[in-house]
Structure formats: structure tokens, C-alpha cells
Image (cartoon, rainbow, N blue to C red; front, top):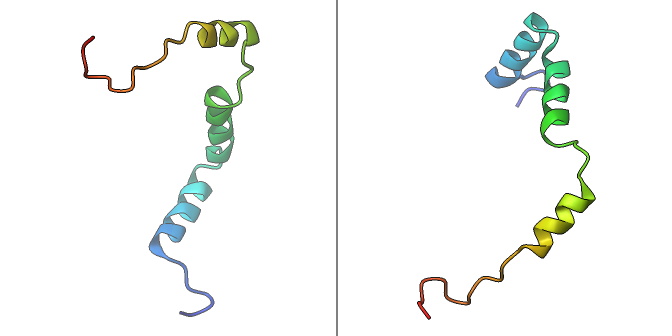
Length: 62
């Protein structure tokens, strides 16, 4: 493979980013909205306390 070879996908991504310079900023904002949130520790404790243990075989009736 030649050292200066670029796949079609790489070419597409470079062209897309050149045409849409705000792409990376929008990606960061999306990540922050979905993944980088502060968790409410009290709410998390309540979820853990309310968890019901699962039966070993879930389809078996009592």
C-alpha cells in the first residue's frame, strides 16, 4: 500500500469536515449531553435500594 494512500471513507470524512467545520463542536456537545452528566447520588442510592433480586430461573413459577 502506498504511503500517501487514503481510503474513500477517509477522503469523505475530510471533505465533510471541510464543508461542515462545526462538526467536531457538535459532536462534543452531543457527548456532553449524553455521557458527561453529573449523577444525583441520592437518586442512585434509591435505585440500588429498590432493586429486586432476580430468580435463578426467571420463567419458573413458584
